[in-house]
Length: 292
Length: 236
Image (tube, rainbow over all chains, first blue to last red):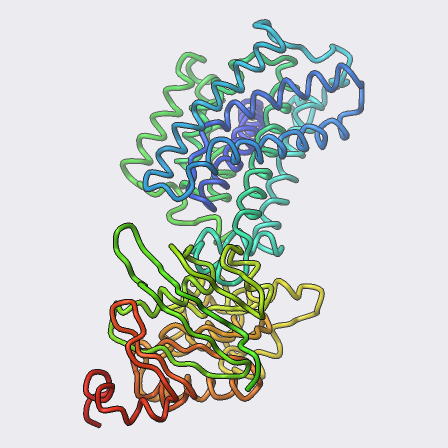
């Protein structure tokens, strides 16, 4: 039972990492970036390739992946969202164009890596096993949880205490007022996408590290659960996404423990349905990015 | 009075098919206080929106300190010293008072606590610095909006309806602040529905009607002009 809880927390931390990137862009810019799962998948492939080519240690690998992610985020905004700016249907059109861009990214990954899953070398990361109070955890799981925590707290700090974060909250509340105050809205937009996609690619690489491999459906496999996390936490809420990620991860793990894995998705979506009916603004009410 | 610091030439602003500003030209000398008055919908706010870079003019030119800034993005105009205090204050209600001020000061981030000098000018903001700006009263929010513009150390301040919706006592305070800004050497362009108050504070005035300048001249003369009195000032 305790073992299942722990497994749920580890899985949930990846859900949360996926979800905060997505929810950040929505919270600041009101964009639904549906290319996020594809960027997540790309992060996994990039992580595996860079690890294979350079054999750099893991604490350098993730910053490199994040850098790729940041660049990808800037491109996603440039390609899928910026050309639509100022249109009446800007938000809906962006949603569609980001779905299309996500498809292009997956096709590019397939062109480069083929259809077979890519693997981390078996000896890339020593997967030691620990036993704490009767719960077995792997080093990979500890790294996952640690990195997820650091990144989430780092993001919360950035949004609440830095000048970029202040500008992001200003743009989130009132883009016109932000402009009048001299905020470079274009740069804040690019920065938001860079952060979001950096988090997404790191989450993807982390999941691949946990699975030992990644296929091109990696993003699709987490997409629905990820979106459930976002809704559960309240769209645009960073703390909500973090908490909901863990809640869903644990709920899934317990379901597997009590019934079997075929029930896993059903519990996630039953939870989602219940929240939408009972608390339409998410478990955490109206808490938004700007209130972090 | 010297060289014009802000010049607006044959400005046209359109929203779709609606022409808000048809043909407006004026210039403001450095240190001057210009009032743009007129009825609702005469195009006063659109002139300021174009001057500050919030809307792109359909035609015409904006020159600031002798340079053509017509196509320059809004944040770069702020950096150059042309700052708008927008209509309806546009306070960031979920951010604290101090954060609102710091946003206005982000060109000066190397300086420690640039907001403190604004607290000297607006003591009421000092008391409320850690509160969400949305909790301030209307008058306090207007003070914050002005302070947020002044912290950028502008050369020209564009004030859009600063007295709108305020109690008479707050209106007095707002005009006292405008006098102070003016006295510090900063050029002011003031858009107001309260035409009498605005013209009393200004040295030059333009009366806008349906997107065009209908009357203009020294503010003291406009206050006496029977056509202006009849249409915009009423009997006192």
